Amino acid sequence: MAPQNSNGVNPGDPRGIGRRGFLASAAAVGGLGILSTRLLYLQGFDPRGIAEQAKESRTRTQIIPALRGQILDTNNKVLARSVQRYNITVDQSAVTTFQRFKNNQSQDKEEVTPTQLVYQLADILDMKDSEVKSALDGTSKYKVIKENVTPEVYTKVMDLGATFLYGEVKSERMYPNGSVGGSVVGRFSMIEAAVEGSDKTQTTNNSTGIERVYDEALRGTDGERIFEISADGIRIPVGDEQTKKAQDGQNVRLTINQDIQYFAQEVIARRVKELKAQWGTVVVMKVDDGSIIALGDSKTMDPGSEKFELEDMTPRSISQAVEPGSTEKILTSTAVLEDTDVTPTTVFDVPAELQIEGQTINDAFTHPAQKRTFSGIITDSMNTGTVLAGKKLSKEQRYNWLKKYGMGELTGIELTGESQGLVPNYTDWDVRQQYTVLFGQGVAQTPLQTSLVFQTVGNLGIYQKPRIVEAVIDPDGTEHPIPVEEGRRIISEETARETLSLMENVVVQNAKGAQITGYRTGGKTGTAQAPSETQAGYDGYTTSFFGVAPIENPQFVVSVTIQRPQSNASNVGLAGGADQFSQIMEKVLHTYKVPYSTTEPVEIPKFPDGHDEKG
Image (cartoon, rainbow, N blue to C red):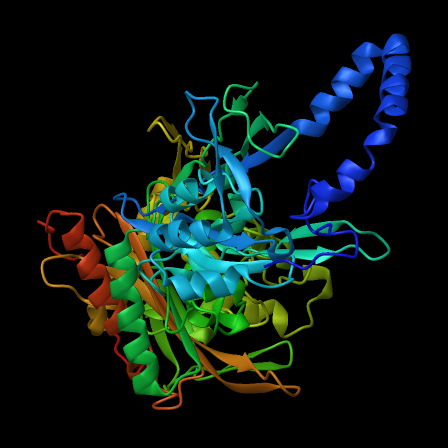
């Protein structure tokens, strides 16, 4: 079955003796005396060294691969798991009749011909005899007989004792939920490439998401089995055997709720399709500890598929820095309420358009000069009134408040591909930017960064670092919870409660699509121009809605961001995400069995007594 050279030696035979090789060996018997003398000479000087070398030459090592750990959602539903599989391969050039021990308790040997091996392999691998014969017959030193066999089948093949059969370990990563949370879970990918100028190879971790960040915990530690081979290539069942067991990888449990994740992805995907938008993204977060319940995108990757777009590999809520628009007025509100004498009922004389330092500031709607409460300014999202209140803060104060909330810095969430956004130093602001930053233009933030402003307000002034990993779990079930980092106070509880009242009035008096039956909610709409991806200037809009619920005791933040909607693009009420906010938030509140609100909303007039929208 295998070729032989002119001396009758099979060149692929690891023992150097083919089916006719014994004839050539017999012809050399005359040299045995000289050889024996040489061995005696060497042994006389270094018997221990010769013995060790002989043993080493008979030693074989098999790697026992560790099983990669699972990635789980907060309810222990599997998001990623590994299945251990093997490719059974053969060195065709070494196929020959061989001997093996009959069993592990006996020293008796039996001879196995290639034909007998074909039948035995066919039965084990559930293949046709002809298929196995074809795989064994040839001159290739590497030929796959069957792919993806189970460890049990692999063990049966190895027990056949044929030294020219091999098991090529192959760990198959499975993602049972497809694209649900795909960009969060990430994609496991290890690339092996040759090192230039060397016969060595180098493995590069090309994974993403949790698969990459927690790779060390997930991958475990391979074991090995060391055993002896007799001089004629047969494994010695009673020889020294050392086994170092593999340590399987740890499981990683996320804060993600698979059901909420799926629902958020479905809701935002429908909305993006309706508006013919470029993309949309959702953040769902627990207020008290920053745990991420969902990072849903309108389009994301399936980690188990070979086809995906690079932009779908990371949640857009952490990778896309956009101008936040009027959602930034909540950040400005906290700064103004904390550092100045402004209250929700403070009255401002708001002009039809604001002329300031040679700059004209307009609102999204036409109105005459009028008196407005600060609450009324935020409720109707007036840029003019926001600047009048915000200019009570110095430029340096405005910048410092952005930095207090972590703008321009990584949030530290345990994922790859996060953008830190962009906040130019206040010393570099031009005369217009010093005011536009107050209503979310001239800065760039990820939706997650903006969500943390609302998390802070909902948590009564305490900022929590976002977290997406809940625990690491040993193979034996021992859990190692990831501690929640201590939060930091950014605003007083009084300022937070006043800001919550502003947010509630936005929903009660303006963004009614964000209302949820049975719950008091609060939030803020946002619209900003989207910088062009191909040329200077702007191209389209970014619309959003960020909010919390229930307002009297906030439990969750939900944010919805939509990039470049084509339908109703200039109308926040029609192109924004208030309705999607209410759908997702209602699902979250019901899932976590949050009690209904028992108190009524507290309305703050938009206008002071004796005044109305006509001024």
